[in-house]
Length: 229
Image 1 (cartoon, rainbow, N blue to C red):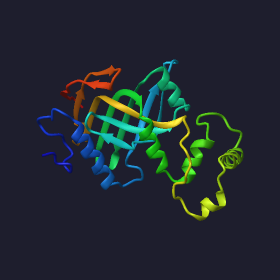
Image 2: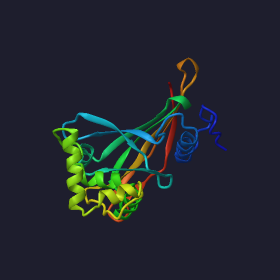
Image 3: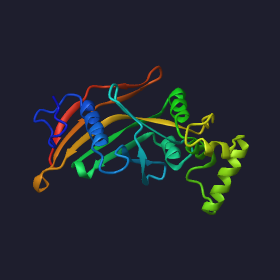
Image 4: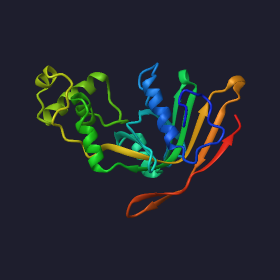
């Protein structure tokens, strides 16, 4: 059985890395020494060929068949880049736990039902923000942005005073079509455990992903190898 408290990887690497990925992510959440232990750096690359990266929150890990879920504005810079190039990478790094996970793979949009369910559970200010913000587009000032939020609330017929008096509970605000989830289907995952004298323990797993018109993604078997530090 995998010992989640042990920093090094087992001598014989498991055939499938996804349970270990899940173990490490859950362990980081339970032993968080910082906010947002589910934060990951997401890198995308559009037509320019210039990579860009930002921090997003991993809102789900499905070990079988193996993908991560995150949510964002589809018209944002990352959304536009994913239209041009649907491949992406992500990194989790937990310095206090001496662990890191690197992931590469193929992006697909989440089903609408998945995006609707997540949006409906968000606090109302975040629901409103998703409508008001044209993410990555210019704005003159923060005062302009706050006024835009107020105008958007009025267009949606929202009573801000009533919402504020009720706390942060989700409101009956529909999800914008341009906001929703993505699934990062994992084709490559590297588990990194810090070692003494920079002799780190690294395991790499790779598999093929094939697009399928009927079911989206077909996954191949995992291949594993150990890497030098």
